[in-house]
Structures are given as structure tokens and as C-alpha cells.
Length: 412
Image (cartoon, rainbow, N blue to C red; front, side, top):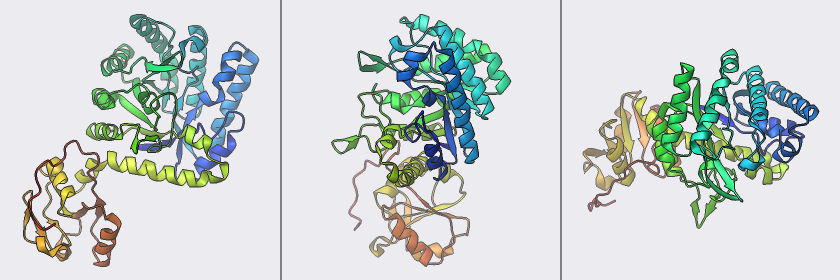
């Protein structure tokens, strides 16, 4: 899975250089080539027909790409300019097509493999909206083939007098239909899908069903928190109210894990980054790195289990039971162990509980999965024992099912 950072909020349309340096100075070595940043909506609405201004801005787009290249940051995913969520702000279809075609050229020159192009939104009727955009997307095939770029469609929110509602491709059936019909007409896998969590939150999307329906069509996911009321993109887990996240991360992670998602995972912290003082930017980027790694760890949980032929568990409590409930049959452990001597020799979900000293007898390639919230302490304990086995953390926060039985009186 590729990890990318979206530059919006870190960079701005007038002086993008410092934001590029902030990304390059972090653990993110790939970013989004966001051409929409170079055409801010408040300017775009006024100057769309100004050819001189447009030419100048496309030159800035080129320079933006060069700044990333100069810092050694790759740009596998591009984002074409758009006019926001209110259909009334968009230009004619012909003007939009000009912008999109130039976006493909610029993305190709920067080495992008994929480009997100939003649908033209001004048709009111759903059937008309589909037909107009089908013609638009298919008209791009010569350029797409020339630059070897996959076009990604994206779930849309639309603003009606400031109130956000579901737009095109927000429903699973519609999203799958658009991608499949376009690929059939193109004669190959030319079109894919980008799930934008920023457009999912305000509209209350059923993300789980959408992701499962898309399956391998899903090529990119923009992860961010929203406050569930409008166009806000916050660092994940910071959009909270009443001690809970506004974003349904449980089903986001569950669904991506179930389809074994292996595309572009894009962090967007636009509004969080823009609100942070520049002097705190390095600390923010370190936190952002940890947040993305946590989400990646959760998504790849089953892939981690799968890569080992043998495994044992450390911990005989509820997390062990939850492991056995979801993965015990597919990835059976040899046994589990626990620091509590009162439970040694007992059974938990068919597993015998061992003394941790028995881990010394394991084959070197057998992985030890810590099923206990005291991850770091137990990891240190195992290393102090001199064990060289792979050590992994298991977590039951985002499992598809949870152990629902009554705990027996086992002394722990």
C-alpha cells in the first residue's frame, strides 16, 4: 500500500514551497499533485475566462511539480482543478473539459499514474448527469492512453444553499455502474475509484457497503475527519464531539481490511494544518505520520497474520477471545501464554495457556502476537528474555465480530 500526503493546507496557492519542504522533511516520501490548489475557488470563479491568468497558473502548476521533484518526493496521484460543491459555481462543460485535458498533460509530465477528475455537476437529472459525464470521460481516452494514466472517479457531496447532501457516486450501485460501464467502453481497466472521506462525513455515507461493492475498483482513499456538517478535512481522530469521532473509522477500517485494499492511502489534514502555527508544523507532521501508521496497521491486520506460517498469542483475556472469534480458524495459534500463573494449563477458546518461558522453545520463524493492551511492556519483556522471534501487536478495536460469551471464573 502506498502512503501519500495531500499538500492542501500545508502549502498555499501563492507560496507553496514551504509546505513541500515540510512534507519532504517528514516520513512522507510521496504526495498528491493537487492542481486544484493552484486554482483557488475564489479566484477561479472570477477569472475562469481570463486566458492570461489561466496560462500563468498552469506555469505555477509546473513549478509546483518541480518543487516536489527537487525535494525527492514522488507524485503518483494527481487531482484535477474543480469549482467546489455548488453546481452554480461551475463553468460550461467545454471550459471544464479544457481544464481536465490540461490536467492530464501536467499529471503525465510529473509521472502521476492516477488522476482524480470530478464529474461535471450541472445536469440536474441523474440520467442526464450520467450521459454528459460518460461522454466527457470517454473523450479523454486518447490523452489517458498517451500519458498512461488511470482516471479515478470520486464520491461527491453537493451544496444546496450551504446544506450538504449526497451527490454523484455516493451510492454503491451508482459508483460501481459508472466505473464498470466506462471501463467496458474503454476496453480495459482505465477507470477506477477514489473514496473521499471528506465528502462522506457530511452526507452520512454507508462507507462499509460502498467499499465492499467497489472491491478492486477502489484505487485510492483520502482519509480525514469531518465534522459531519460541511467541507472540512481534519487530521483523523481530531474531528470529535461528545468524546467520540464524527467519522465512522470502525467501518472504514473493517471494509478496507475485508477487500485487502492495496492502493493509495492519502492523508488529508487540510484544515488542521492550515490552523496550526507554522512553527509547530514539524510536530504536527510527526503526529500525522503516527496516525497514518496506526490506520495502516489496522487495515493490514489480516495481511500481517497471513504472512507467518506459525504463530502464538501472548494474553489470555478478551483480546485473545476476540482473536479466536475472528481469526482462530483461519490463522490458528499453537497456544497462548499469560503472565498470570493461576491460568497456566487452563484452556481459552480451545487454546492451552502456557507459561511465557515456554516461548523459548518456539521455532525462530514463529511469530508472537501480543493480545494485550500493555504492548510495549510485554514486547520489552520478550526481548529481555532474549527471544529473537518476530513480535507483532494484535488489536481488537476494528474486528468484524466480537466475543459475546460470558467470561468463566478463570481467575483473570
